[in-house]
Amino acid sequence: MRCSPPAHRRLVMAVLLAAVSGTSYAQVDPLLAGEEQEVAPSLWSFHGDFGLRQEDTSGFSARDDIERTRTRTRFGWRYDDGSFGFQIGAKVGLGSDDNRDNRRNLDNEKSNGVGLDVASFTWHASEHWDVVLGKDVFPLATTPLTWDTDLRPVGAAVLGRGELGDFDRWTFVAGSWRGDHLYDDDSRIQALQAGWQWRPGAPFSGELLLGYFDIDHLDRAVREGLTRTNRRLGDSLVSDYRIANLQGALTWLIDEEPLTARLDLVRNLGADDLRDGARFSVIYGDSRVANSLELAVAFQRIGRDAVSAAFNQDDWWFHSAARGVMPWIAYGINDTWRVQLSYFRERLDGADEHINRTLLDIMARW
Image 1 (cartoon, rainbow, N blue to C red):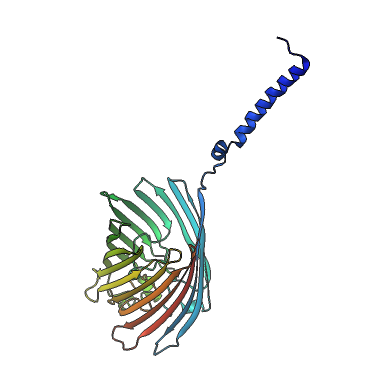
Image 2 (image 1 turned 90 degrees about the vertical axis):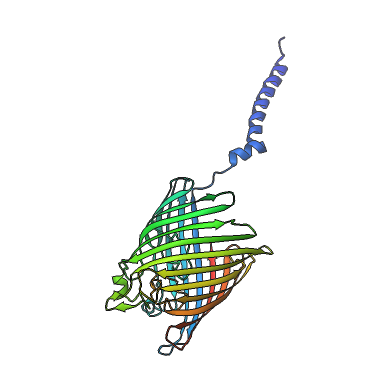
């Protein structure tokens, strides 16, 4: 049948309209558009944290009290494609005190300056094993008794984790590092740790960690005064530092808030005496969660050569040969910001005076 010109034009227009409509429908169909517009997650991510600290330390008999304000900002970028990872970051410090005071104030970081924070490579060897190379966070689970988490040693580590039965988990870390502390430190650290997590996330759960630290090449640290209260004989340390570490924790969920009791024990196998230390803490709540209150107290007792006084946390004034108590209260303002008020009361072995320290910390993490 032959179409008249008007009918022919109408047929052509209908075909073109159908073609265009089909194309347009494919472009705006919500289901198809959702698939086409879905953006794959970026392999790069930004990370950072900020800390503002106001300190008041008093009780000295031979020096002035300490009142100072310090800030620290760390930031960097991570890349991870599932089989390989890389991160690099810097840190910036600014304080009301001078860097020349850091040694006498027993600090583990300079108050003022810019430096490299992390630069590391990660190979995800399998679902359960990673290999990390470079300058990074110390990968062992520690407490302030043994390690300051602000320190970033340089080295290599193997990290493992996985399921143990239906409800439990296991962890393993082993590695070797250069301490990379202040004043061109060239110390060496070898460490390993095995862990068992019993029913993590359950209303009643627990954790057990067994670790070992071997810290040597401390000659420069001795000369620079970083070994602090550890015993010395001339320019050498009296003891070696081969430290066995046992940690245990139990956690109860009370009205959906965690109550955790943790015990941390150390013995320096490289010392003949004054070689034991212990820390016990009870923490209710978790201020890392938004709108959550945290109440806690920690008791600490450290023999003079129980740990390497160069590397444990500098929030406490004394790094060994001391005993003390630390109560604190913290609040998670939101997912980014939190605030903490801490009080320390410490006494050096053989001394009558107590050192009192108050720290107010405002912290953020991205």
